[in-house]
Structure formats: structure tokens, C-alpha cells
Amino acid sequence: MENIYIHIAEQMPSMSKANMKIAKYILENPNTVPFLTADKLAKITKVSHATVVRFATFLGCSGYPELQQYIQNSAQQQLTTTDRLKISKEVYNDEDQGIYDIFLDDISNIKSTFEKLDIDMFKQAVDRLIQAKRVYIVANRSATALGVFLQYYFQFLLDKVELIHSIETVSERLYDLNKDDVVIGISFARYTKSTIQVLEYAKEREASTIAITDNLLSPLIPYADMPLTASSQMPTFIDSFVAPLSLINALIISVGRGREEKFQNKLESLEEIWEKFDIFYKK
Image (cartoon, rainbow, N blue to C red; front, top):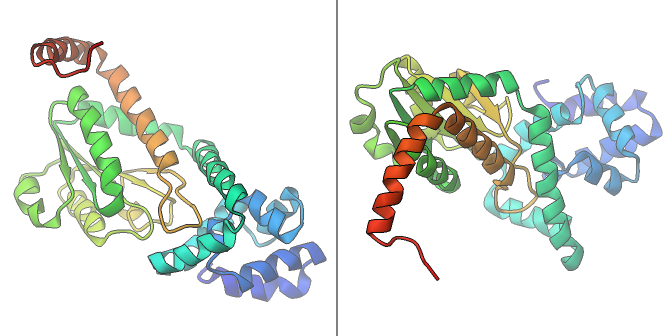
């Protein structure tokens, strides 16, 4: 579907009254809907959750998540931070309830992420990371926080791990990139061009590429051998990285299991060093 909004409008003459309510809300609120869960959309339009799901299938989608991906692809990339701040005022308009809604939206993001997780692709990514000679993590802007967290733990588990969050240093860091290496690109809408460019370059150099991004319509996907998606939708000016962080936690733990013996030896040596330099607080 090139334009989901036109597709919805074209289908309206044959819609039921309930579907018409949903369609009208989507068309009248194109900047809000990309961030709404099925439950929240149902509540706002005063229909049932099942009706929202049936609305998505009526449009030819496999379910609400696929419909939402089309809507996000049409709108989310064009939203500025100011636009998203305005949306948050609309969605979280009740101050007290809004606090609870933020937690509920994060719970929904985690639920959506593990429901859509491609476990075979996840295992393939873990195996490739364990075998890699070098691992490079590319993360920019807000996604840098995820990159730092992933690099911090991977440095204990893998032989060589580097974090790249500046396009200016790419040429010096990746000049000898090859098929023995893995490059992980982390980016969510609004996607950073430099992350896409590095992943594209890695693909050209025949390195294995892993994308950690929000959906299969992400511009990182064409350059990813192993795409891993995590929902980050939240109707406010920040990205919700709760679900992506859960995905990264699972990745770290799974790699740790595969490198358990080497990791155990390294950890014992590190404990001695930490003790020597009195790193951690003691009562």
C-alpha cells in the first residue's frame, strides 16, 4: 500500500458503522494514530478491541500491527520533535492517568516485541556474534544510549567490540572490514542517515549485518542480513526504548550462554582487578 490513508478513504463506502468510526478517526488524526495501540484506538473510538483487529483485516492487513506499520511509515518519519510534543498533550491529557498510561504503553511495546520476534533470526544473530572476529555497533543520537549499553556488556563476552557514534571516524575504524566481522546498526524513526550509510557500507564489504530497529519498513532493513525489530512507539517527544532494551538484554544473555566458558575465565580475572583497584562500594 503506497498510501494507507488513500486506501482507507477508498474503502469507506463499503465499511460498517464501527469501521467507519475508526476510519474517520485515523484520517482526522494522522499524527496521533501511528502511536496508538489497538486497545487505545478502540477506547478512543468507542469500539471493541476485536473491531479494531477486524478493521485492519478488512483493509487487507494481517492484523493491527501491520496496519500500524503502514501508518507509521506514512507519518512518523515526517514528525518533528515539536509535532510529537503536541501529540503527547492530546494523548496524555489527564495528568494523573497519563502517568499510568506511559507505563501501560511501555508494557504494550514489550508485548508487541516478543509476539513479533523472529526466534530463528534471533538465534542466527547470536551464532554470528559468537563466531565474529570483530563486532562494530553503530548508534547515533538517542539510540547512542542503547549502543553504549550493548557495547559495555559485549566487551566482556566478545574478543573485540567497538562503538561507532560519529560518522567522521568511520573510515579509520572500518577500513579493513570483512566477512569475518559483524556490524550492528541501531536506529529508530526518525532514522539517522549515517547509521543507514554505515550498514550499507558493511553490506558492500560482505560483513554480516544486524539491524535493531522498529519495524520491517525501516530503511535499515534492506542492508540487514539479520533484522531484529522492537516496538518503540510512544505518543510523545521521546522514543520509548524499554522494548529495544529488553531485546538487547536477551541478545546479551544469549551470547553470554554461548561464550560461557571464556566469559567465566575473563570474569574471574576482572573480579581480581576490580578488587585490587577497589572499584565497588563495600559496607
